[in-house]
Image (cartoon, rainbow, N blue to C red):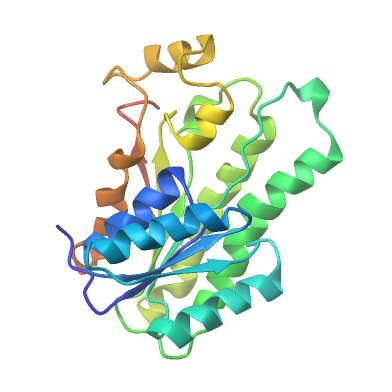
Length: 250
């Protein structure tokens, strides 16, 4: 178990699915956790209640990561409740699958604003804290799709490819301050979001499983301990990496 005692973590898009489990895993490792959500207040509060019931500390904070004012308000709320944010996990994302022929400007901007601009704004706000400790860490949630290039994912995969590059650049830029920046790339997964899309059990899911050597879709529990490790001092010599946590899907 990674030791994150006396640390404060902000997890974006944490009201359900992978984000909710990441928040719970960080809390289990000892961090006080800010559970960000954009619209699902009830879901975020359930995550907070579960963390508190298990003996942890957590707070739900509303905000759109693609809006600078919201991001600044999220960091202010975190500081007021628990102190400076030591761990930032950029999980919030818009996932939309459609053929290239169906692409609209609205679809493009919606995904780019959340999946690329959002992490850039949150990393900017994170780095703007002038009292960061030497154990500060950022973990961005990418996708194995940046390597597998599934059909109908041109914008989504493009945004996550941009996030991988931003991760590597930020790692070099923030290293002099002791801030580590890494990314985790999950496989195709069975989550609240993909269930709402009808993905698990679909022909597309069967095709994805056929490409995963370990023979199943990922689940949220596959990712929490990995993110907690990357956020901890046990990973103090790791930065600028995109770690595929994908059952071998590449």
